[in-house]
Length: 252
Image 1 (cartoon, rainbow, N blue to C red):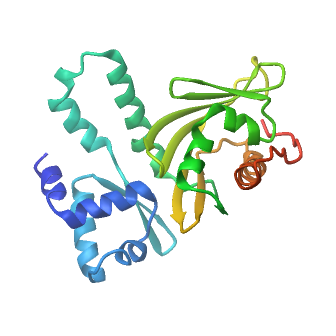
Image 2 (image 1 turned 60 degrees about the vertical axis):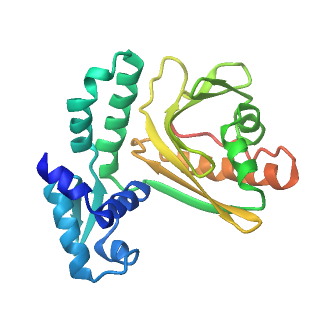
Image 3 (image 1 turned 90 degrees about the vertical axis):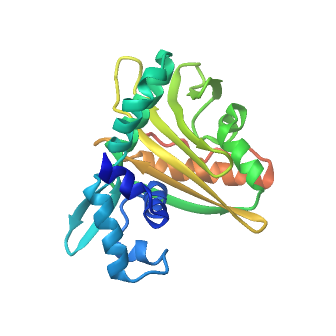
């Protein structure tokens, strides 16, 4: 526990952790480019973080990629905050956060896309979180409803097509969600994955990035679905028209 608090005490190391939380799987060169520090200096800070188990690394070829490991922080929370968590819902949220941040961040995005949309940051945020908006630009959904932190997209017959559960929101800039497909029917369970929306204002435009992680085998077709959905989103925000781009069959 001493090594944990020692690692967190330095602002440079906290900045490195923030960077790895925002973008998992960065190399030493990528991290050094964000700091006014020598390569050796960044390596020393990364060594302290690795010793504290706050980061884990994955070596591929001659490159080493760094990832945030939230488990030591979770253990510290459990040690001092656990007695205060009397509500089951609070425990469930922390367990989910641990699962998503502690295990899924071991991989790089399986799919990533980026586009520029002529709209305000507020308008894009509303479009991504409002159920009626989601139904207007999604390429296959007939309707969409919100139940708490869940967006449930449905087919024309009212059966669920896709459930998106928001696990972490940074207002107007970042949305982390699980991705729960139901397009194969109620009796054909499909594995879940997760994705992230990143919003960055660019003058009178916004840059939207989609990162999709842990896509199960057999669901590679979600990449095509993303292209069609985001194309519909861009058209809807820029023209006000609801356009559905070719109802293709999504992989199950």
